[in-house]
Image 1 (cartoon, rainbow, N blue to C red):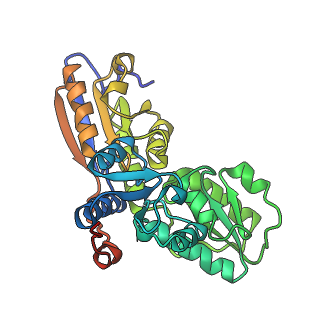
Image 2 (tube, rainbow, N blue to C red; image 1 turned 90 degrees about the horizontal axis):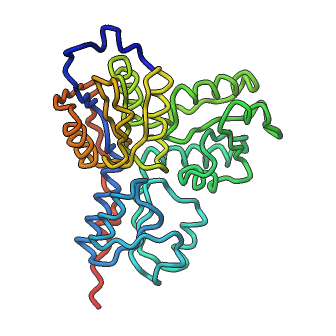
Image 3 (cartoon, one colour; image 1 turned 120 degrees about the horizontal axis):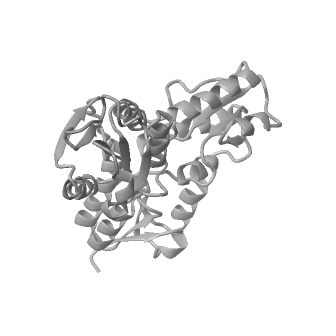
Length: 327
């Protein structure tokens, strides 16, 4: 814990909520949610969505109330129905199944995830060993692995790197899940480069701009905050990484789904509380936390803009191609 007798805290200091920018929704998440809503508006109910469109239960429940039907597998989708692939991407086997069932597919895969898929496919065709850095059970990693299961070696930490076998040392490349911790990934890449000096790096970082920006903002926020609350889902990789980044900077941090998760004992002796959000978290949940903290005495709110974001992604052509089916 911080020394609350330091200049960062003291008698008479105003209790403040610090809100960093950027926080919350990224361009890929906005695009995915827009795709579902536009599809519902133009094509009518129901629209089927494979898996969570983004990793946030609040968002999923909102869209379900508007007419989206979320399914785990395509076998739950009626023949020929409008089907949206989530922002986390899909493996070729899923696309093939959708084609066999004549589903009207609208792909909401984040373009930055698509970039990783393209890299993997290219190097698999060229007979490279591919090291994929990511979390084994994350949807994005599962679907990326499906692009080239015979060529990909999955690693999640340095120990996994040391245990790698059957890698071609002179024909090897690495790719990463887009929502990882920059610091943790850097350590893994350093070890890969030690083991395989000829390893090829991605032409540009696979870790997405939003993940990088939010982590950078949290690092700076941690210099001032006594506590950081990250609003996000338990299965949101980028939200979990924000907690880890704050903790690594020496600031206590907790992942909360909403205001109801805030515990009074966390706030004891705190004067400056940072509140941020993962890239799939809607701003309404952040504001509910801010209101809850206000009731608890943190009535002053200060916005801190660290990085300006103006990224936008185009919508898929399929939204224009398909027409409403009248029964």
